[in-house]
Image (tube, rainbow, N blue to C red; front, side, top):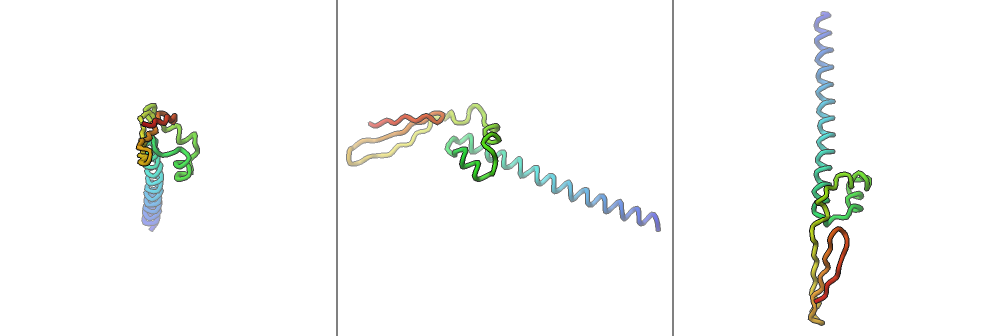
Length: 103
């Protein structure tokens, strides 16, 4: 009888360990997935850090710690046509600096 009780206790402890391991793995997976998403958003250079903060609840420092030197270095251009004046206005930005060019 004593052997069955020990076997039952061992199974209970084993199963609880498995459940806790699964929960921990899921938590880590979510953190890693969120970090990957933030890195992707930073590399696009089109999503503001403040927007990422609102979406994730992370601090600006934590978000910035995931930034790589290449992030935000992409040339961004936004053009709009001004038909009445027959001009095209382009805003070109590198690393947050913008230059407006009207042609």
